[in-house]
Length: 206
Image 1 (spheres, rainbow, N blue to C red):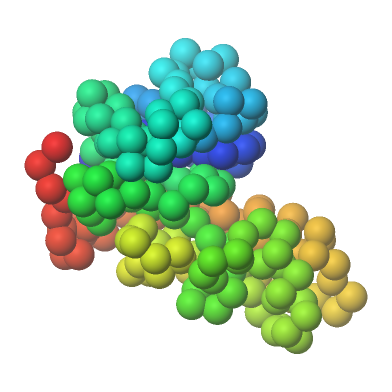
Image 2: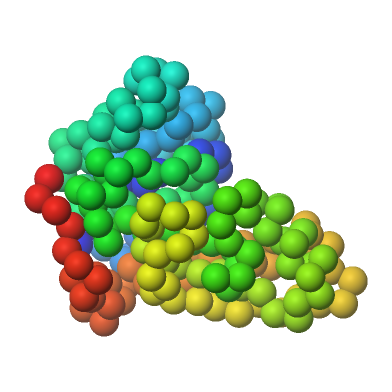
């Protein structure tokens, strides 16, 4: 699985880590496309600086959610994407794209799912909820994307301790440190055949 497309709404920290790992020859893949719903996304500028094709696809530009979904699916098909990696992508993936890339879309979430996932659980809200709950351990989860937020099959998790006196900002920083390496490990295992995405059902023909 060499051809990878990225979806990012803002900074795209996971994407950046994977591109840096590629530059260090820790993984070999072809970054075929970076898509954002946000035309001001720093992830787009980062990709453009590296001569990676970029696109802005959102409901406003496309004329509705169904149209944006079809546009995204077509863009992925045109570049031959074999895997789609979400990196802080804040939009729900539509049914057309989900069907065409079933069990080929990966996301990373900053908690140990199923805890602290679902609608409204993103960014700093997750870490605030973890601290408010009194949890002693949190972490990050890489999972396959389905039609529910933070719900698809879990591929890997890593734990991060919640320390006494932690603030959401401090906790977020420590979780962020492990997200990139976890994403990299999962993609390496997929390429080595240690994680078989076909075991979850292959993607439809695109």
